Image 1 (cartoon, rainbow, N blue to C red):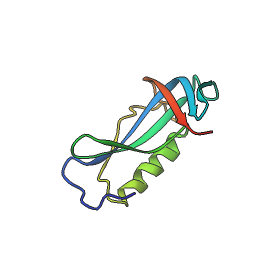
Image 2 (cartoon, rainbow, N blue to C red; image 1 turned 180 degrees about the vertical axis):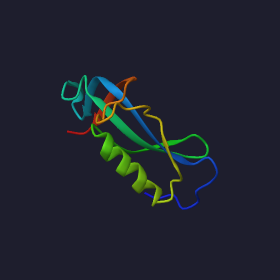
Image 3 (cartoon, one colour; image 1 turned 90 degrees about the vertical axis):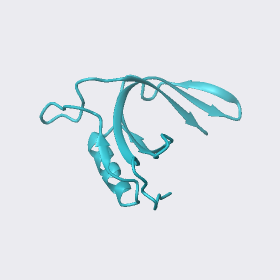
Length: 107
């Protein structure tokens, strides 16, 4: 998906959080999953001018999140706003971790 208009206010956000709970939804219902609980994950979202959000990437690597965010600018999503904060030298983990819930759809 690309955005060729690049209206004022459109940008890419790089954020993070600690996974508190995970669940998977499929044809049989909702099932708890414990694969990533307690892990810090990073999120790259495109934010549209009207505030709408499109999830572009998520995963446990800060370095990969930066690459994904930078690549998204090549597809017209606008500048990157890195909202993760200060990192200890040599560490990919941020000092402060917002708490999040993660949901996956499918098998």
